[in-house]
Image (cartoon, rainbow, N blue to C red):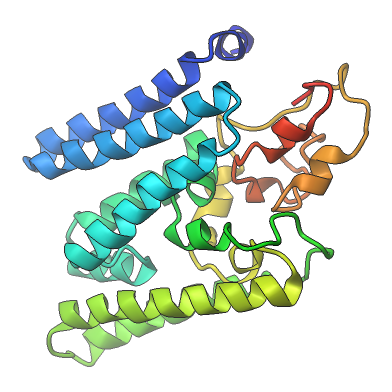
Length: 281
């Protein structure tokens, strides 16, 4: 494993290639098993976008992550959501789960938010979330105040989304699919509005991600076991604290333990890596 990570650091193209191959494997498997060319195109596009961003990061391009956010986030919001009418929010996941259909949102959640984090942690939050894509344009990229102890709200949001979709089925609501699409539109508007308000109230662009977003309930437990993590070379670290100051999620990246403070919150934005004066991360 150590040799593997050494090669990743030595060859700038190796990590992007590995990530691209992972998504290509998913694309081909889903294409063949579901007999639907869309999955090949969809996951190939996402994998290529992520690989491009990782390669640009390796070349020290400062907007590398934003490129991926826009390529993937806009594709999922505008094409999959608005044009194709797929609810890629958590309500869409519950809807397809209740109908017993392994399509669209259920596949998306399985790959990006349930099993995918075992490989890349909460990389979804840093590179593909269309809500965070907008919030990251706000002025408070570095939190201006200590983290609040209100993260429990995300669990309330999670349960409410489940109750909402469950109620539609229990009440035998007509045209549920149309309701779910409108839930996607209204839900996104609310997410953006709440996210922007919280960002300015707490002076923290990622306040919504930390306290409100229900998707993190899936992401956090799996992220604990993530293969790709930011780690610290203790021999190089001079304890300057710059990495902690720039982290948008308040993660203590100098601690290599999986139990490190806010460890499952890391979105792999690599701001800490860029800020480290000794290249210890």
